Image 1 (cartoon, helix red, strand yellow):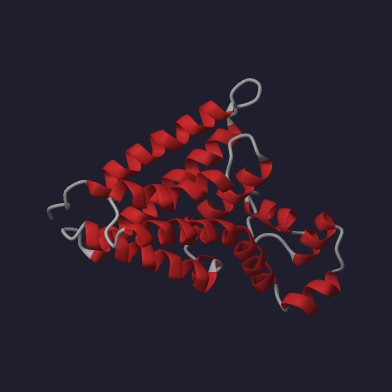
Image 2 (cartoon, helix red, strand yellow):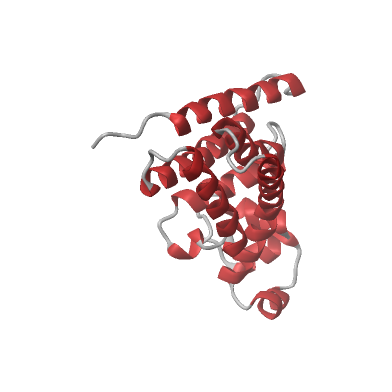
Length: 201
């Protein structure tokens, strides 16, 4: 059912405009089972979002652990790659599952409802806080507020790029080289954005 629930988020009606009955019909699932296992549509959405996001969180955690095992203050570019790289790995161009994941991330970032922003849960928050602490050590001139803004930018740029790669695919299959090129371009761009001088207000 995960794919069907995440697919709902990419439709014009979105999560609020789609009923549990419509989701279970699309998934071929039992309506009563959703109530029994999840209790509500909101809890179903949160459970699916967390299952989709968890592989990204796990890879981000592993990447940061590897960097910190080598040095307490890894270069900003390596931190960007450890944080953004798994987003590319889990959202490959030309892959429907990757497109659904990118739509989900864009929805979470852009929806004003607190309920939607909380879908990813405490595990994702913990990963984000660890990266924020690591970036703060190597970019001490940035205020916590600007640092958080720039990290949200990493998520937004990557998710939107992956979504566009799926919606406007190149003729034929996207080659691994093209996919890797986009990954490298993004990391170069995002590293420059993260390490730019603090904004003077």
